[in-house]
Image (cartoon, rainbow, N blue to C red):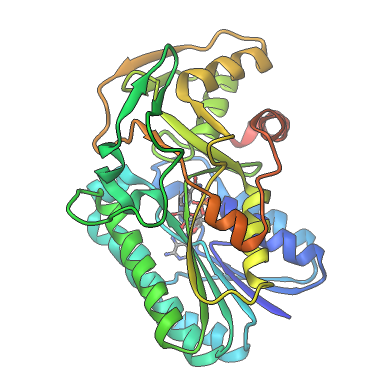
Length: 345
Ligand SMILES: NC(=O)c1ccc[n+]([C@@H]2O[C@H](COP(=O)([O-])OP(=O)(O)OC[C@H]3O[C@@H](n4cnc5c(N)ncnc54)[C@H](O)[C@@H]3O)[C@@H](O)[C@H]2O)c1
């Protein structure tokens, strides 16, 4: 089998590449290694993951930008892929507000480029797209909440389902550019010769995640704590997310690929059984690292959802999938990787 992964140096992409390489499949991984630049870091980040992939003989790395159509077409022309996992993106909300054009060109046009070429050169392939809970924008905040001591929670629902409206709300430019990709993926799944899955992801975390303040908060809080950097909480810290360990996400992708399910949209995260607030997470981190965490508070960020919990009933029942890794267990993996690699941060 031939598998193409965009964003292969990223957190999700590198785990997808590793998963299929370990099964003996032939994997092509493309990336332009721009994550650090997006987050204005003068340290290298996903270069580490790019290097990590050299440990697998059956992964071919191709350094390219998904906006560069001739270079991308060259990869597609040479191979008919069975599975394409499109993870490459500009993933930061803050970046999208500051640079909406670049955000749009990477996330929306980049996804369109991937789809066009997949349909042209890999008919019959499965195409998996990493969408986001941000496509629902502030509609998520229309559900009644209850405020507890350390967290908010939904009063009447277990989580946000796929039928939640995406209209009549603000999303942030990131939410919009990702949603354009999401819609195109759905469209091509219905009208072209590829089978597509849109996974609207909540909060994914794992080893090889280079968290920054603007994206990847579970990893960012850990890295900041290990490196004695101050953590700023935007809002009151009672915001709640459902969290999912990256290897469980990859299993859901694979379950879709191996299923005979038609093109589909899934909300995915840890679901109601795997939720945590910022305050609770920091508490957990303090206990695991046996330290006091240095933090201060600032105003809420625009469009920050007080609660986002995915309703994962559809992905569970359709793909016979479940989130297997608890936050405690997943965090131990992340901590041990980060401790072994302090020089990267
Ligand atoms: N991690 C999460 O919690 C989360 C939640 C919702 C959605 N997502 C989506 O999942 C996907 C993967 O997220 P991640 O956490 O692995 O992010 P990541 O930043 O670790 O990985 C993305 C990779 O894409 C690469 N990239 C960016 N622009 C590129 C371009 N123009 N050409 C080629 N490569 C490019 C980056 O260098 C990076 O290696 C993204 O599409 C993101 O929007 C992630």
